[in-house]
Length: 140
Length: 161
View 1 (cartoon, rainbow over the protein chains, first blue to last red):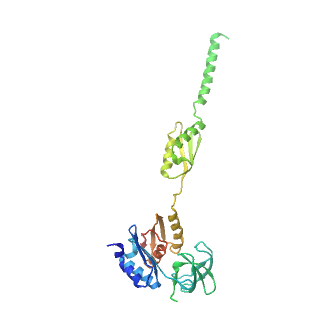
View 2 (view 1 turned 60 degrees about the horizontal axis):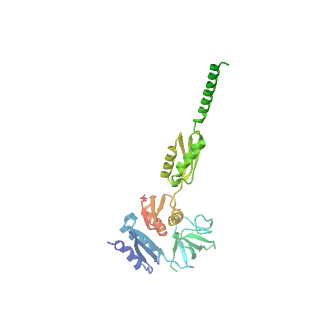
View 3 (view 1 turned 90 degrees about the horizontal axis):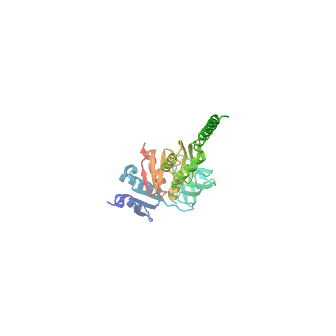
């Protein structure tokens, strides 16, 4: 069984979930799945399926880097576990905090600085960078 | 003075002088030992950052070397030099060089793991190894953050609480 066959349920779910840019490649005994899906629910579902194939993700033969697609200028939801999300002057946790967004709050994505840090604006007008992994695009 | 007494006096004086000279010149000079140790140590190509000091026959080695093996080898070279009483090894081991891809991942992991204080990450040739504890419910989110860094592989050795 190839790795793509092993994780076929994950790949199929991503495509069925609406991914149009999925890249699947194997390198050094590790399968890499990269691309985007239209919603956070689809993304979460991929991880549930991954866990079914490899309980607790211990084997280490898949790097699943599928993110929710986002439109610059669109809305994003703060998906921290429960705490506020820091908004920083620059893209890094060493940067000073210039504002905060509450857990569950929906704010505006201005632009993606890079894969990990996005420039956002809150409803109060606070503008700065937040860690992308805590922001989930919401359907327009 | 009678001839015999004169000869005796001169020979005793000569003996005294010889003893005096002998007592000081038999002791090896620190400067000479230092030169000899310097030459011996220079035979090891890893010793370019090493300084040799000698006091009363005791050699002190200081400076940075690339690893433990180099330190021991250089120490051995110094100890084998004639007239060295002992060697004090004050050399420090240089921090290991990190390749730029790994260095980048290490930096990015600081942010990725900020909310997971019980998780420890190590990076080697693009492979991120995770150890420590985590709740099952936190695991997907953590792995999503780590996967976003595009590692070669994630070696998940986390203990599920």
